[in-house]
Image (cartoon, rainbow, N blue to C red; front, side, top):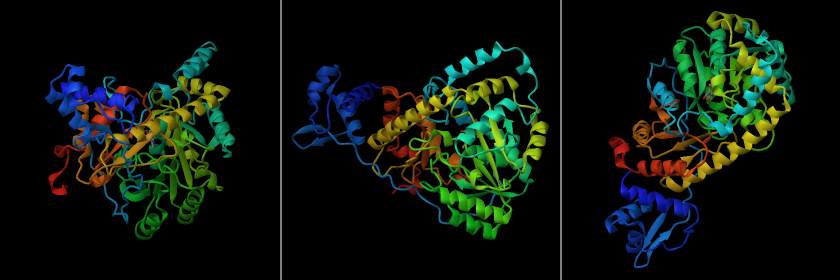
Length: 478
Ligand SMILES: Cc1ncc(COP(=O)(O)O)c(C=O)c1O
């Protein structure tokens, strides 16, 4: 880091920590140079940087003043009017690159949607593991599909407390939510079939569909109300769609939530056509306010339309690889697919998770992490609004922990990602969330980070970088 960036960081921290409140005058350039022991030119460059960020302004013949936080627009992000025709996706190594970066402890982890330790439950898990180990060797056997009866009962009980009674017989334990999605797709599709997904959508959906040789049909997702039913109707009338994948509660990356009436309408629409709805429920426990949201599965009284997929990856620990798939209608086929694929999910983690899910501590843990997520999201939004240029648009999720940021149309999010990595900051470029680079100018930030001066400096760094013309494609520059 150059000297002027260091000085800018110090001044920025002093401003954001309230040492120089909004509207106050900063010491003059000469005085700042004396205080920092740097040259006048260096201090001037640091102040220019802060002016670019909109943190301070130069008033003619009066000096430098601290600006109020700029109001970044919170309007809905751009919507495509109609779905484009389905296409077969070709492989990309960018996803693997982003996943790899998330493993590097040297980086500020704003890339992958992986909560930092404060938001997970390792202490609780270790406690359950120790209790369980004292109970003998039963847990070491294969937990052949559908998986541990104890865990399936614990999961069923948790859904029942959400007002969604589910028979444990309909639950199959999987290696995370991703495997649950793959099993669901394998059950209801053949290579060459078309599956509709919300757009932008979690890149794991795109990868899974690519691996299974499926055609992808993107349906616009509204940042507030989720999958556009109007656009889905348009698509259902034109193409044969075997299944629809949706994350109705706090979608990744937009954080949108479908209102209850739209969830019910979606299930009714698809039942009428005998099209399966694959519901990704992985974020629904992480609502920021109010009560637990309902699922589409709750509106599937006959149990024949919705296959629900979820896991403990976002609430407890992604490394456990414990997830589940629920479907009264497809349970036998799901069990068969699971056996074919990898015989069973590891039995020991199933036992530890079962032990934890039935304890009162689990609900207390969820209440605690929900509050932490809400606070962390507010901090991340505030920092983006402070440091990013005017015209930046952000999502307003009511749950989960990913923030979607839409920048100037000319921005190249992938070039920005590579630059950020050189400075030990990981982010996810928007291009991964759609086919054909539709969201190249967007980035996704993981808000589930332990807040610190370094995290704030990382957001300030990104906010500064997105102004640099080298990250903008010339044909789109305005
Ligand atoms: C919407 C969504 N579904 C599924 C997954 C994968 O979950 P798991 O780690 O349980 O396989 C993720 C992870 O980021 C996700 O965001």
